Length: 213
Ligand code: GRF
Image (cartoon, rainbow, N blue to C red):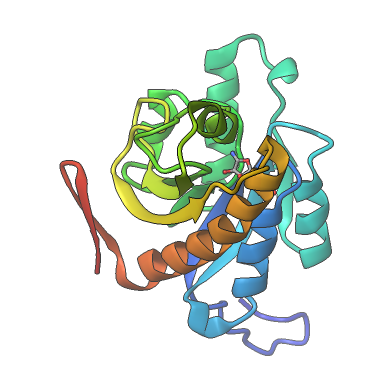
């Protein structure tokens, strides 16, 4: 790569992360803060959202990171949308695809494009409380400990091999919102730490067991 005046520019170091997000993007914000440090070993090169109004898109713009919306309404059916997401992600040539509050299920055909390279964060201690309401379900069940999980995405819903987890206690008087806010603090730290380690050292998946490095 060269600047217009002809000076060579070294490509930025680190693994290429593409982040998929549907919501406010606090997990994305944490990754964007981490990638400022070259020693982190990974940088967000693209953000993809299914929702035109997602706060994550504003965060990407503010950070100077390319973003794209792939909204289901713009596609004939779910297969076509999946293909659209896969194309949008592939353009960024990711080393790792990070689902950070991406509230849709990606088809096996998407995962086949990025085998064992798609990582998700979930706000519960899997395998307990998978699905879209992990915080609410844990609270309703009455567990005293819940938490967050970073895992490799497979064809199921939040069923892939677990990479890292943090426990978060349920406090008397918690409602879904207060509990989720506390989980999200732990979740951001876990995601940043885990993605960085995976990017720097690699990830081995053997059946249900995973090992970083
Ligand atoms: C996170 O808790 C994520 O695990 C869940 O939704 C939340 C998204 O938060 N699926 P944000 O958009 O990163 O702030």
